[in-house]
Length: 463
Ligand code: ATP
Image 1 (spheres, helix red, strand yellow):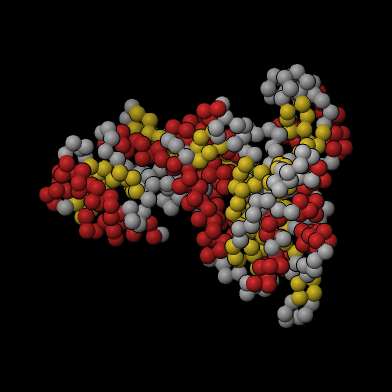
Image 2 (cartoon, protein in one colour):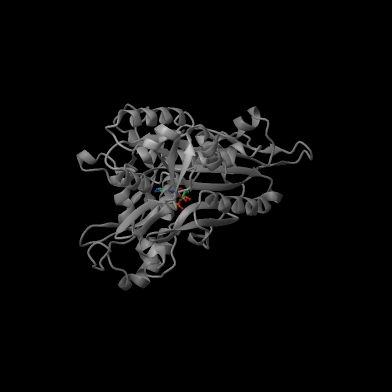
């Protein structure tokens, strides 16, 4: 049977809650729609994903450097970028149950091509033609208001102590890349870079998403990992193809199965874009966007030059040619990568009469690398030895000490959080100086001498 068929989103949500990966935000107050908190194992997994991305982007590329720009930025930035006027999704409301829905998603659900970037008029025409086919997913009735474009920018009253702060709000950033564009000149003037070069950033973004279902796939507060690559006009498409390939390989390096990834080409390009593809992942609810890889021409720097009055052009040191750099970008969400990694790793195996739930997650991403158990909790010599080993290993690896319940229960718990190795100290350890190491994936057990543990795990985690 296709594994995807029986791995439902509900199972993943339940595992996340049960094992402390993801919690609904403000749960004791009834929650806050489309906002989630990352629990003890969730924060480890998210950090490991971010580290893997940073390593691939910044550490391994001499001409990509890091940045951490502030969440709050000058309001003019969002005018220049087009977000104030055009960062909007098409909204309709069901007249019966008052659910607010994204029209492009409703149309796509009926097999009708639509795009959130279409104008109100364009998508409104398609809606008129197909109204009869669309039903409200909440109540099943087909009676909607007219379509309206709804702006996704989230406003704040930062620095404005008057009562009419909404007139000139400071926004919570809707994407991290604007912080990169407006720092382009400072980076160029301070770091020893020349085109082509990239700026990478990981940070929070905020969007007033109309429909925020599907767990952490679409949230109103989320984290993006974005890399903007500044290139000459002539090199844009060549570099774009290279970036597309590198991004595909990145997802494979996280252990995601290639059959669960696909490219989606944008047919409705915004006027300035040269090309736009998304990498989609086969989530439990079907293929959907994981990452955007776009060739954006010189639009971003041209706009910021115009609105700020600053010269953002570049002079090629070899040819002396002056031009506005073109930008190709890679933009991927931490939450969506997290969900893809979990969905890809989640397996249910029949072992005798029991079902083993196991996260066969890439070893480097696993929240806990090694769990250390004394065989029995009430034998102090076993506990002492296990604690000694745990104390040494945790200096190098994220480890967990567990003496609760029986060994079977401890294995099940570690399997569910994807711990690659469980190490047990038993009575033989005291006599012979070796321990049992059990492999998560095939459940095979080997005896390893205590003095060899360091090199054993080094071998396992170096690749
Ligand atoms: P969608 O079409 O799903 O709304 P988008 O095209 O608006 O996404 P981008 O603006 O290209 O998304 O953002 C880049 C990446 O940021 C996305 O590929 C996704 O991984 C992540 N992302 C965007 N919006 C959200 C969100 N509301 N919640 C979680 N991640 C998001």
